[in-house]
Amino acid sequence: MEESVLTSVFLPLALAFIMLGMGLTLKVDDFRRILTAPKSVLAGLFAQLILLPIVGFLLVIAFGLTGALAVGVMIIAACPGGPTSNLVSHLARADLALSISLTAISSIVTIISIPLIVNYSIWYFGEEGSVSLPVLQTIIQIMGVTLIPVAIGMFIRNRREELSRKSERPFKIASAVFFVLILLAAILKERENLIEFLILTGPVTLLLNVSTMAIGYALARWLMLPVRQRLSISIESGIQNGTLGIMIAATLLQNSVMTIPVAIYSLLMFITVIAVITIGNKVVTSDMIEES
Image 1 (cartoon, rainbow, N blue to C red):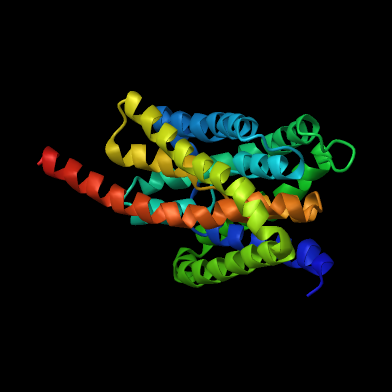
Image 2 (cartoon, one colour):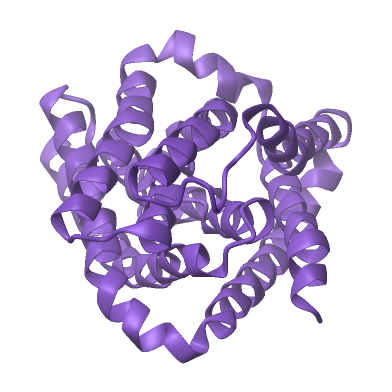
């Protein structure tokens, strides 16, 4: 498969398929939760949409990254949570309803925030003139591969709920396969420089992942939210939609170097996820024992 076919056809279609699968798990009530449980939802959105990009920006400066690699880190920092964060929330015994709501709402908001954050990063880190994201065109393209498939999935669930439930597992398996293929393609494209890029961006992406989860949990604890909601906010703050990030870098910006921090973040994310699931189960169990 040629790079142009991979980035212009397969990658957007794969992302649309993954988002369609996410739509099959959503209901309109997930979007109404901001009215019924505003404290937890607003805390989660603040951690993900405001704190995450700020932490990413500060870490990039602290580690001295510039150019395409710096922009790559900011791309993943600008992305919303994805279906993976919902799965992790489920396995960690977090508040799954809150996790799904945060993913759904942030996926809408970031359609507008992504081009603004990425374009500022391109300008600030010295890539201006080589690439840029046309704001309106990018909003339309991201809507086409995220919001519209999600809406179709929600429509199918509303009309054929039993069918959508039966389709959830096959969609999750296929989505995981697509994600792995996309990840491998991004890594293989820059395999000659992979070790160098891993040394340069591995520490900053790992720290971004761990620190944002810790900050999200600390914020939720400060607001005295229940333990399961703290876990959900923590997970949504640190588990990002890597597929969308790779699509932005490879398809919209057509810069393979920018995909590397996103791919490395996605790889390291799965390592930290094991710890999150283990700790989450222990914390929730301990909380339940204390309450009883």
